[in-house]
Image: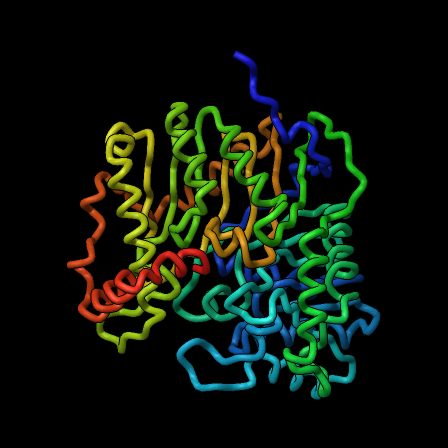
Amino acid sequence: MIARRNPFDQLPTIAQDPTKFAILFSAKEFRTHLIESIRQASKRIYLVALYLEDDEAGREILTELFEAKQRNPGLDINICVDWHRAQRGLIGKATSEGNAAAYKKFNQEYKHTIPTYGIPVRGREVFGVLHLKGFVIDDTVIYSGASLNNVYLHYKERYRFDRYHSIENATLADSMVKFVQEEMLAHPAVNDLSAQDKPATKEIKTDIRQFRASLAQASYKFEPDVVAQDKVAITPIVGLGKRRNRLNQYIVQLIAQAKDEVFICTPYFNFPRSIAKEVKKALKRGVKVHIIIGDKTANDFYISPEEEFKTIGGLPYLYEINLRRFAKANEANIASRKLSIHLWKHEDNSFHLKGIWVDKRYMLLTGNNLNPRAWKLDLENALLVKDDYHLLTEQFEKEIQNILQHTHLVCTYRQLEKLEDYPEAVQRLVRKITRVKADRVLKQIL
């Protein structure tokens, strides 16, 4: 039998000192670390997130950034958020200028201003958003799937649980900043949301199309290192679109490389076909597969039955229907413990974790939801950590235990509710979607 070639052996990598690779275990710890890092910054701050919300936590971060800029006007500060998301109100709320109004207001109140760039990945939000992750502060990369608002930063009672990593590495930080500067900020499709004369989306439609095409070809640039036995290897990867998406390819290859054990975290259970196929193959090879997913009540779109139902509240139920179908098809694998499905639930908090661990050798840090939307529409990135000498094993085992502490095992698909158990409004919505065959379309954009 010919051994399968390992595609990651030839991957260009950055050497990482394991003592400068830190895992944070809570949203509160993440918030504290982010604020302290901003206060100590001396040369640059680049924040890239889906959104920076105009709420208490978002304004706290903006205040810290502007105060840092006033103390040190030469500090290079740039904020990047999704162009569309920043210019609308919250789903289900009244129409508004969105978060862009707050960015403008902050710039009017301070002498030294900070640009907040809107990144338009597509002409309309539903067909693609900025889902790139990573905050660069001096030579440290703070990497998380979290955006910046009250719930992600646990500013009040509730939190949204994510993964949080702080990596001190000048080469990695430079590479990520260079990508933002050269592939995003330099393009005419990208405009400052805090500017008085920012264009309307329809005025830059041609620029947006060209921007998307250039992003689909873009990659992180760095001089590869030879990784010694006292270091781990990191490769930053970016991907956009269905064709020739390197990130998608590496995710599939990562699962295909598994020999012993795979952990997969996703908040929205809706695997692309290629991932579902590799998971199935891994189970056939005897690989132990763990899938960690939020309970439907821990989904950020969940609406309690006591509250007024809105269509968006149907999403957690659609994901659970997918999960139940998958669990039913894999009942034998669940019974033999080849497949473990861990449902996360902690009071009324929500779950937003993403990532993959393979054989205690590879760890993927990413904001990618491992769903068709991430696969085809959104601009995504990841840090692939290759730990050949098991220097981070103890840290990652602690992270896994931290994630699993509020989970319970699904021992049979019957534990998951079926359509008839759902609230009447949800049943009507699901039946309507199924009747008009809209579920196939929805699966591609959710």
